[in-house]
Image (cartoon, rainbow, N blue to C red; front, side, top):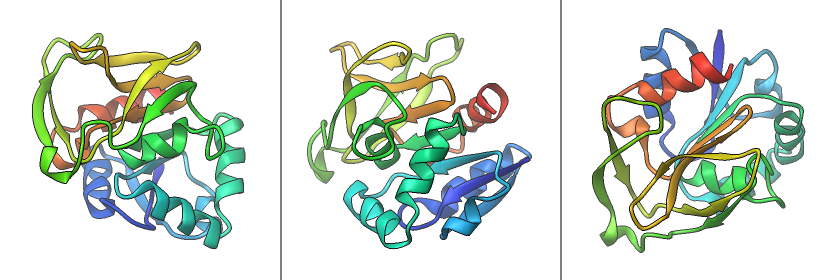
Length: 182
């Protein structure tokens, strides 16, 4: 199995490390040609506007959007959530995204999260994170904070988190993507 890591901007090496820890072969994806032969793709956290501009520059936005619409498995963290939840971008998850929903960089935080169906909490690292104010079917929330903000969700072949699992050393979200969604 080969999982691509979109390598245009963001926490690329951290995702490669997590994919490798799951026993899967990672591949850096920098061009449209790099999308061929993948079993899935992770879109790292970073800056969503920058990633979008780079996707356009590398002529990858439309091909990637087409793959997502065809059922290609994609896992987006932080900025990846923004790209996947916006209809004018990758349109992979039905939900309303609030960019930088927890505030600026200085409002970044860490907290324990309760994940639907998991017995142990997950340590979430939020850095200028977005959140989903709502999701519509067929999307479903996997982690909802006490105030109602949705910070992890899935829809068919798409998994998104507001937080950065690649920074924790805990492979459970990457394993979930590999084992349940591919």
